[in-house]
Length: 121
Image 1 (tube, one colour):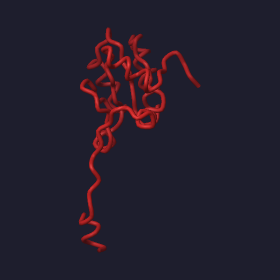
Image 2 (image 1 turned 135 degrees about the vertical axis):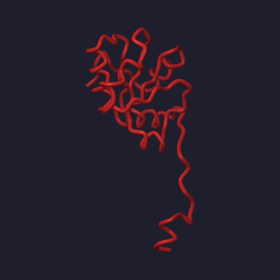
Image 3 (image 1 turned 180 degrees about the vertical axis):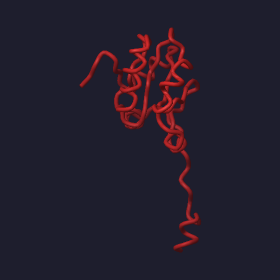
């Protein structure tokens, strides 16, 4: 279900390149594994949005993203209720972003010889 508060990942990237701010509402551990490779991203986990939303500039176009688009839609609705008329949800979150081949930073997977290998190897 597409609403006027949603934008697809490719359109989100175009908006970000023109000055929109990406707000990532995933948890730090999720971001450590895979994050948006963009210069201007604010991380505010959804659980902290109510206490931290004022860190987001009200007069700037804002794209809210998460893993799949669900948490970011909740955050977008919350921001809209607080007067952020330029807040939009990124459909399909970082999963859609990755599917479209957009810029990502990933944590390198640990090669053999990790602690599990030592215990069970």
